[in-house]
Image 1 (cartoon, one colour):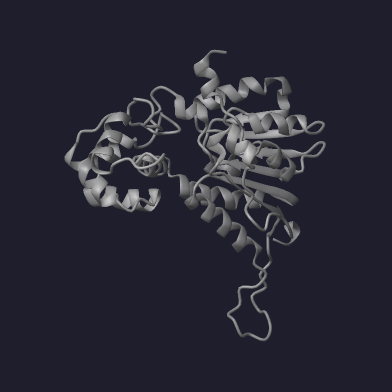
Image 2: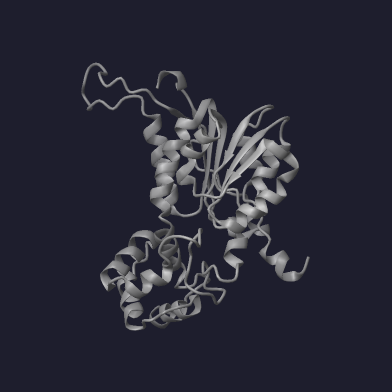
Length: 314
């Protein structure tokens, strides 16, 4: 393995923590909604006897790599090349329900960040694409070169939480056309000087990627579908990497764990709310110092776990 391939090899984040949280058991059925390089899925398959797995990935290259890596498990593994927003539809189509555990690892893999032509990172000069599925949808270049200044500023502020979004949007519009990652990064660097380790373009690239792939809406939908697919005591394990994702995960678990939605002050509950989840991790789990040292990309990871309850009452 050459130096470049070592650098770009994807290291699964909080690998053992995720497997422990799933409580993998013999003859269990599990879904990996973001199979990537199959790091987590490989360990799921090795953790018990006769495990069955359904994997999802919208990225065709990830799909092919995962399929090859897990080929030894034959019919026990099914992988579909689609976004996890289609989770319930695909699971029902394959008769893969109910399931004992569902994993979401929402981070962009090292392989995706380093792929030529993907355009996810300003560290590599590539066309501004950023689509997980390169056969459909709007590209980042489409947004950068066709949206109004206000639309770009709002998008960068909403999805990148960038306080200087208006300044960046103004610079983008005045520098059109912008076709590559390097061109966009240079435009941003021209109006926001670099201070510290974080590149000024980081939040803008995040915002564009989220918008291009409709990531937050897809996540909200997929989490609700996941809850429905889980069997009694099935585990929902989600690893997020920025505050917008984590907020959705936290809110979803909290809302599904509520035991009463009646207005405050009522002497008796009349809403008949039935909770669907119980939190397993009451505080977010983060990587340890050793893991962050060995894999710096893990530093922003946040792990939350919940368990399905009251399955037969919904």
